[in-house]
Amino acid sequence: LVVPLSSVFRAVGLIQRGMGAFQRIDEALSLEAEPTEPKPSARPVPAVPARCSPRTAPDPAEPAPALALDDVWFGYRPGRPVLQGVSLTVPHRQQIALVGRSGAGKSTIFALIARFYEPDSGTLRFDGHPAAELGRQECRARIAVVDQNTHVVHGTLWDNLTYAVPTATPAEVHKVVELANLTDVVDRLPGGLTGTVGERGNTLSAGERQRVALARALLTRPSLLLLDEPTSHLDAINEAALGRVLQDVTRHCALLVIAHRLSTVQNADHIVLLEAGRALASGCHEDLLTTSAAYRELAAGQALRTRAQGTNGRGAMRL
Ligand code: ATP
Image (tube, helix red, strand yellow):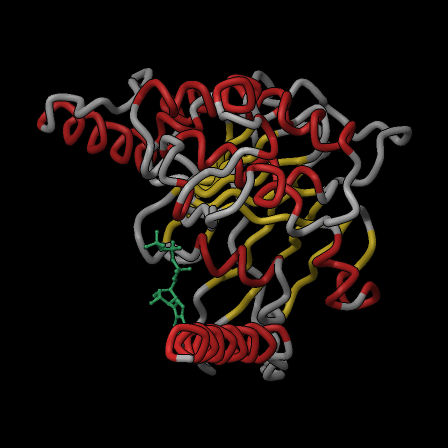
């Protein structure tokens, strides 16, 4: 009797913890906006050098961007703006990166995109539709988020890939496995897709776990993929592998990436440097190195740190 009873108590404990987590998620999703006063317009973002963006004028045949922020102001507390007139466009088939010092407002932009908060003023548009007209669930259905916590759980690779889309077909799963460069993992695991990945995915490397999270997100067919510090736990080899995967991913959805390490995003189509809640400069890596002193400083600081750490397996940055 003791063994089954202890299993029951363990199960009850797990369910209670799960219920608590669900309650917190539900609370977060139902956060309501605090209406605040509109703010004056921000100083304009410097123009993007032509070399970074080959399109000189918008093509009317082109679809509206996956995401557009227009003069967005936001503060967690009244009178303390965190974002000050941020404008930002994430076109389809492009990778846009957000960089800047800690506290610049990068995660806050993600929180607004996921509609955990509403801007005090300014607009967000998803595929050309104002967020306010779409409603929260519709906005969230268009995005997928991959953060530093890969959330790989004990179970099969198949379960880990499909838990957001349990109705996925084998063909759909194979497609994202290929896209996320997980074919080797499937070949290696005894049982392939139905093989178990161990407690928290401990039979996989950090890079493989990150790519599992990416494949899972891609299975939801997002219009926009948000990546928060995707390479923070990766060594240079895995960082480079993920970089190549991300280039392929842009054929399927738009990408917005938060990165502390510029080596992660130096191949992005467009980089926006945030400082104190403002888009201080934007362009591609090479152009920002020549046009923005603040970007140069950030890049030089990182190169120095990397050198001081003896590279520590980190990716190299072009300076
Ligand atoms: P990091 O690179 O360290 O993650 P970040 O650029 O993502 O920083 P945010 O996390 O967006 O910056 O924070 C921007 C500012 O907003 C900071 O001053 C931070 O203290 C403040 N902030 C962030 N979240 C909250 C919150 N929930 N309530 C109040 N202030 C917040």
